[in-house]
Length: 287
Image: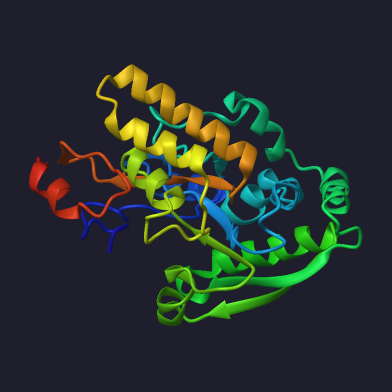
């Protein structure tokens, strides 16, 4: 229906469009308007940081070193960028990886360093744990989690893959009731506070990593009290740098999304929110 002009706007977002597939579509539909933008939802591996072995920062850093983020993007998601705690799609508030200071090195794919850190933490032959994902978010996530399983095995972390139906996943795992590791999208960054406070504040019901770090909590509260925009942005950037050092959540990537619409659709631009009605109310059809 979209190809034949019966629908005015294409999918609000396409999660996984590989470049070659997108180019084929563009050639068949050259009249459409196209816009790329990075997702404001990061891919994440989260874990029970209140329990061993994940309460040891060396183990968390080893997990981060074990993940080949660029290969994961290219093999599964098509396009995207490695992301810090604030997804790259929230461009004014998200730091590029090379600006994360001391924590930037933990984004490097380095299996040898991962094994060294595990040995230093007391796991010279690795350990066994569980890796959960839901089948309810599409085939790409399943492909992704299987690659993550392989990366972890390569450094000595044997994970049993647990796939959950979406309802069961939301009622248990996404409510913080799980063991081991979880691979999931997590934290829609409409504004930096909602994604950071919910993930790291000990009083947050969505603190899925069970994080309780007084230094992080103090920064989260400080940015809430700071009215000056530049000063608040500095705190948000420092939070991302500290999060990169601690690796309470192992962030993977923000995928590239392509949206499209008919040229007669005016006053429209895509963004990854649930405000579909607001966008429709603002546009008009010039035909």
